[in-house]
Image (tube, rainbow, N blue to C red; front, side, top):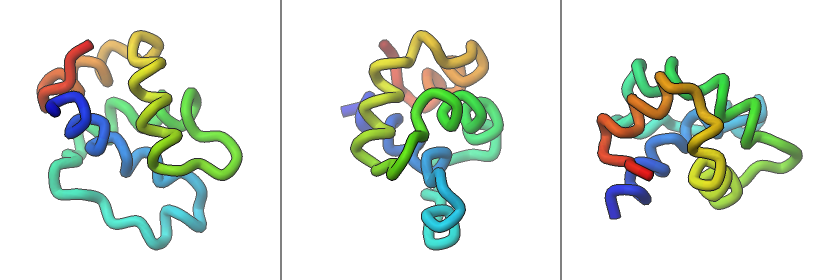
Length: 82
């Protein structure tokens, strides 16, 4: 449950393409610190053609150890642990 919640927190960083980002409202749980720590990694590793919330969530889970340490720390601070 905590893992899923934390992955949902990553979703804003996922609001990947400009078209998606325009309509995407960041959840209140996504702190500026979390976004700053993870956005670059999530975009680099998990945002491809036609990203969906499900695809990005799965990617963040699968590539957790490829995310930067700052991102991992921020995710852990909101309850995600691997």
